[in-house]
Length: 236
Image (cartoon, rainbow, N blue to C red; front, side, top):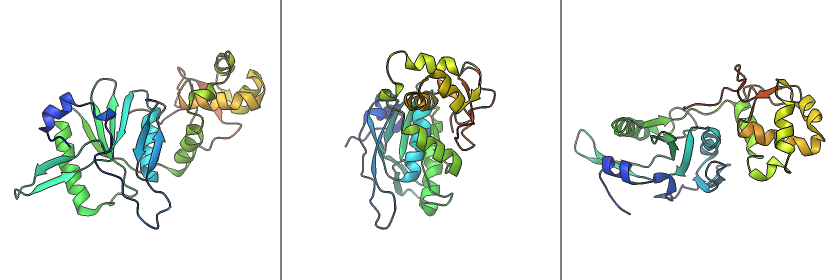
């Protein structure tokens, strides 16, 4: 492991390409444990340590301004006001198109990690601010939004775009907002069309309101006609 000044490392190191500096713990009794998330943004796997982290990875993997993702790629060390050495490994790293970055943790509830985590959050946020970066403790997702993202994530792989010519037909069917299943039928056989439709929704080629449950009558429209349809984008 290499130790560098934070300002130097931030300029020189592509953290999005690094493996975790420490393993995610496997805690007995928890329903979700460590695993890998296949990123549609990078085409590579990202280490994830919890269900909360996987959900935040889905949000970032779907964000158009994100170009790179990594789990636990850096450990930050600093001295507190007493001169004691402290360290913290943020769970997530995301690179943005403008070259800046996000370091984040994914607590399952606001007080997760206790005082140590909250003190570390202040120190890491200050270190990031000096670089024009951002640190956040990302709030858990609403249940409906989480369920919708999980569903669409199942269609994120390029294979779900379907045969040549299918995606243009799907996008053309939703040139104006219309109910999901109505548009799917207009584009062809729904059995073939629906995977491509969900793929397009994941990649924001089409939009819908993900704050309400996905169903056959939900309105789906073209990406350029946002009209409040899709409110999951942007930095969090």
